[in-house]
Length: 181
Length: 181
DNA sequence: AGCTCACTGAAACAGTCGTTTCAGTGCCCT
DNA sequence: AGGGCACTGAAACGACTGTTTCAGTGAGCT
Image (cartoon, rainbow over all chains, first blue to last red; front, top):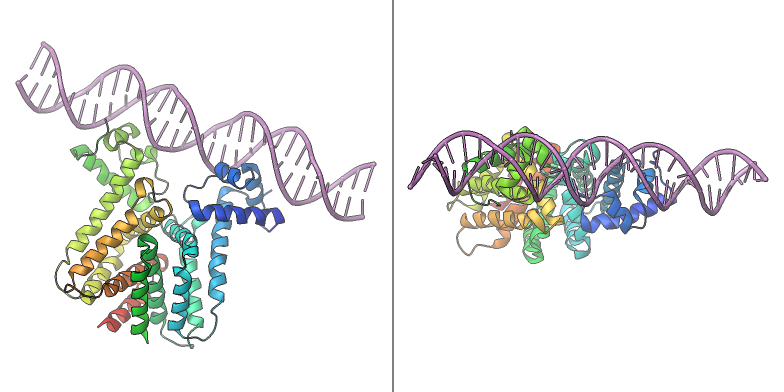
């Protein structure tokens, strides 16, 4: 009945739904308009994802995969500051804005509604990022430094998304990097 | 017909709806359950707030008022670091967690859906906080410092809301304050 | 007494929601 | 040739959505 594993059609539709969700958000996503936009039908989405919650979960996992793909690219013992610099360069790029918006939306939703499809999304991404930052530092380094760098990155991203002021937020981030070394 | 100004019953119901929204979120708020919970009816809510969007707008304004009430309390020429310290003390208090959750939810929603009732919420709160931080500094100070402090506070709040780890996030904030002076 | 005005109840409206039921496709495998 | 398997279309289900219509309350004022 329900379908959790991969299948050609499933991944194809997931990809299309992901693109759709990136610029309309997931909050008031609904099956019929989505299906119409990606050339499918509610019947099929339900068949392939089991339920709407299943679809949302798949979309959130897809978004997280995008994020992890980025994080993996800087796995190495470059210091914390260098890692932060690269992460910011990625986050500030305009083409990643939709993903970041989606990220904030999902983060907030998973805080308010800790059960259901959104459950654990916020905590999962915090852990993802902290783990990657830890991998950039020598073992035994102060966890507070990683937490601080993560906070600066995310706070700056929030600011950037709302104000679109790359100069000011970028300056703040460079200021932080200066203080850090 | 529609009602935008204040009225005894309106503010009373707004307050009740605000408390209701504080722990169930605003994302899938719906009139009938809300009305039942606060001892009213959809008819009356629509009469007093004009539409559901009007109600949402009123709730967001109410949340922002809570936030501004805090910000006003540190209007004075204490430095940036001292201001950040007090803001963090407020944000880290467990009783303010629901408000912060609501804040993140509204922030994310207003980024994804820039029209309608949520419009401008994210930008408005960034401006609110930056203005207050500016008032804590001597005129002509570097705006990047304010932006950085705001980013740290908000990033730390995001982390705290997701992980509930006051020790680690608090340590990160104190580390930042140390770097700042 | 009569009138205004803020507020309210009950019920219906038209629409959307996620999901289900039933009935198929067409392709692959033996 | 035939049986399973992945996928699909059409239509309906019941529940819920915001909103409207109509018809009142009851208190305060003149």
